[in-house]
Length: 360
Image 1: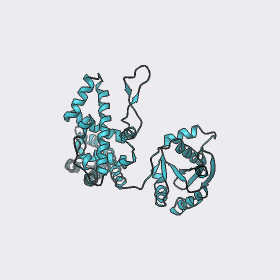
Image 2 (image 1 turned 180 degrees about the vertical axis):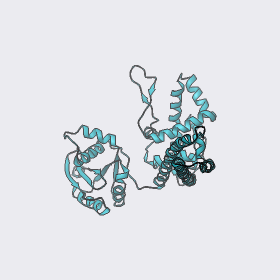
Image 3 (image 1 turned 120 degrees about the vertical axis):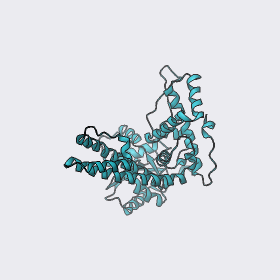
Image 4 (image 1 turned 45 degrees about the vertical axis):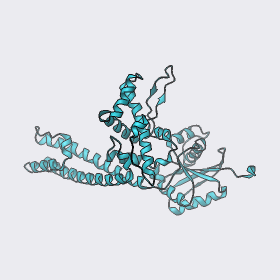
């Protein structure tokens, strides 16, 4: 009978580098038990699962969405057939603030994770890492190389200015290997520690450039295979597509296009204080995805006829400012990107169509 069914148990996990703390709660949030591991190996993760067996088979795990700490834990539990949901840190903070306990400890944090999962039943479900995870590692590593090269070139320009005040190469030109080689040749005519340090920076920047370009080629090859429909959209280059695929991490985890728009921060927020015809900018969501969609919008508003016509209609017929019209274009592009990612996620990909025209 239905009344004899055991309640769903939620197990909140506060994950750390060396220990994990688990708190079990019932379907109304009452605490049933607590356990802390002394290590974070696969055997310790299996021990947690065996400990949870006392609460019955109807259970789900909730972990704070900090994947640099919880990735191995999630992999082990998914391999064991467990169900795990990811709790955004902001939801956990709200759950901790509303708790009757004070202070901060691992059990309190684990309880906050469990309560946040109870209050939000539609949290994203964890899954094993796929190609998007590998692509994100490459994209993040390339960005680290670019950032390190930028720091090197900033220091180099100051050293060049000290050697010769008239020597002021444009910053963008220093990303070319041939220009760095030319600077190295000219530095050979100078003596002293400043010239020697500058020469070492030039060599380091050159190596960073070679590695960054090799990574870009590798990323381009991968994204050509993973996202051909996305790449076919106007304004989407290989690096932008790679950023979108990596940050989205499998578009099929979103129930619909509106959920994806909320995730990337393009969904507008209504203004209810006396003016219901306007919306305000949402600063929530994944800002990396938002920036990628913004780059697409900026490119399309310059060279894509459908986007130009759409912006013109928004500004003339709806009396929106240029900034407001651009935000509505980004919202439309979010739907376009969502459909393109869905098409690329299908086993049999169809030929890309003019998705922007359909969205408009």
